[in-house]
Image (cartoon, rainbow, N blue to C red; front, side, top):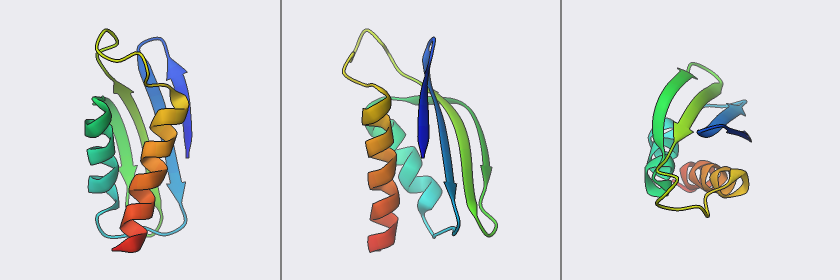
Length: 84
C-alpha cells in the first residue's frame, strides 16, 4: 500500500497477491469514512488485487487527513477482510 499527496487529494495504490471477497467494498468504505471522494480509479480483482485511486476530500473540513492516516485506514480495511 502506498499513498502520495497530490495538490488536491491523494494517489492511493494497493497491490496484493491475493484477492479476497469484500476487499474493494471495504477499501471504498474506508475512503468514505475519511470523507474522501474517489475521483478516478482503476481496479483489477481477478487473481491479484490491484487498485489505483485518486481520492479528494473537503480540505476545509478536516486538515488532519494525511498520507499516513489514509494508508492506515486502507491497511485496516485489508485486515478487516482477513478477519472475515
